[in-house]
View 1: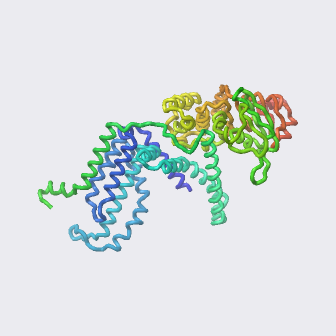
View 2: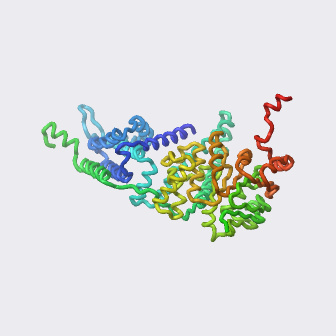
View 3: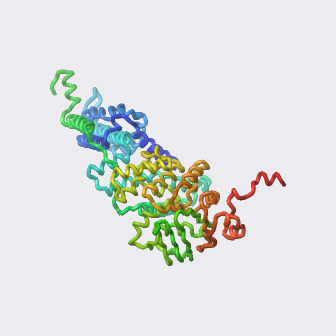
Length: 270
Length: 252
């Protein structure tokens, strides 16, 4: 439970980063969401054996982190947390795909290793961009931007409620689980039995809380519709930001930039 | 005709599991009164409060708010008239930021964005939470949450303010701030609380509930001086009316 508690604290600190006041922070959330979407689409659209072409894309997270003043180590740690999942997805590629694809001196590298490295790089890029987006925008503003960009309001509201109550729920479940641990004296307690009743209790409590929240909403005139309260402008800075970055990503996607650079330096055409 | 009158007549509520939480409760609270509803755990205080804005439907009896009977048709109006502050502010603050939460009620009432902005700023200043407007509720302390919860209700300009255990879980300083804030309100105020010292400071009238019925209804001091009544209802005098334990032991 301690680790869940820590994860929630981390989530809070990621959200607090969004209170910054850099030029990136001040942009309308829609611009940042759009650019991140274009970025992710470009990165994931590459074929499985393409690796070198991905590296120029690192310019986006690096520029964003430095412009917004985010702590790079913090973001890196968050990305590393997800690495086990990526490893689980890609680890069998080198086993099944043994065809030699390229040679580094005497060393032959199989297609499996290349595709594995490609999966890893793409995950770091996309997940990192996700974290940076939340860090410079805030989860709430991301949801609101998605809604303004056409996501059905029901989903946006669901996401917002989930985010609002994730803190309350983890605290509640943390307390319940601590109470169980303290009374099981280092043993397993009553094993799965006590655990299932604990989960059941949590569900019932969540249900009761949902009812109380609904009552609180009704008491304040809720009739089933959420009203947007703030108007934000999509002005010149946003258009410039979205255009420049999107153009760059599409250019990087269409042109093989590492090869272009290589041929410029060596003077050889591929 | 005043909007501020609360009239409860022979109210009865039986929960679906057969528990009779309120057996027979009647009282009239008039304009500008500040009333404390006290009683032991399970006396029916919270159940009673939930009837006042139609969150629960009575099994028997009736409720009138400002001479309007509480029915399904009159509910929206009555909910605007009766502002309810819940015991747990986490139930009340469900929007992503303090501003959005306080704006929720006025937006539902159809205020224009400019009016909403003005109203929210005004009530946040009133409860001393102006600096919190852009914060998410989960970053607030207990006292701050409580003040914002009160602001969410005040933003709808209610005539009657109903609060369930307002000082519950607050540190002495936050409690003192809250008491000061509530003393300045001109609304009709109804509190339930186990904090009898707060009741003594804020209320000129007290209704004592015991096992689902009104056991006593009268001036605060008169009720708190009735030792027999208090002990029969599992209550005690407020600490400020009890002798000082240090001085009295010194005399012995």
